[in-house]
Length: 305
Figure (cartoon, rainbow, N blue to C red):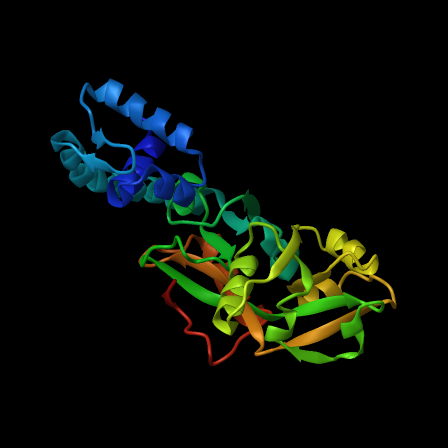
């Protein structure tokens, strides 16, 4: 049985909704349905009783839900031991990072570490979805750099790496261009460009919801250059990390405006609780603790993610 199908089954068994489970897994309803059907064909038993809106576990499904947790736990534990042994033997450091996190000093830190630890073989994995515990096993990562911790389990600990604020970028043709700061509510009707499918977008949308309005989103993009060009042509204003925008020179006709209340976000270095670091991992952990781009008493170091 495909171990990933079993993981998907566990999510579906808890939500009892193909729609909700597929959104959590970042796959389509049809793909999830096909995977469940393959499991049922392989087992020779139906796992769910299906209706138009909800699904319910059958007797066989309840057994697999219970035993599946044990199977996944043993599988993950075994892979962790294999990876740990391999890392110790080969002096290899494996690091994963969410696709948008390279902007916040992650790669700079990794390569700076590599420059002073030439004997260590660094392996990188870029994630195209929010990280979860299985990345440590299936992706063979000893550390993950991420800001979106929604899918992380209690076994994952975090160390603060970066903290920054979201700001508004406008064209000098925009009536708001004379401002240096503004209340968030003033953006209620402003056409905006936001990060695409990014935890930063979720943070901003929540802040708008707390302020009592739904923002006018014209476009979502992961590219700062695209956002800068759209703003420069007065197509829309952009909400992006301050450092991300400042590091891309967009010309004198662009203005940065601080938002009130300030909307901040954090990037963390994640690692598994109770798992011994490899030799390379211990050196990297110590290096990040010394050189992290941001440290503050507001962070809970070594706390569950």
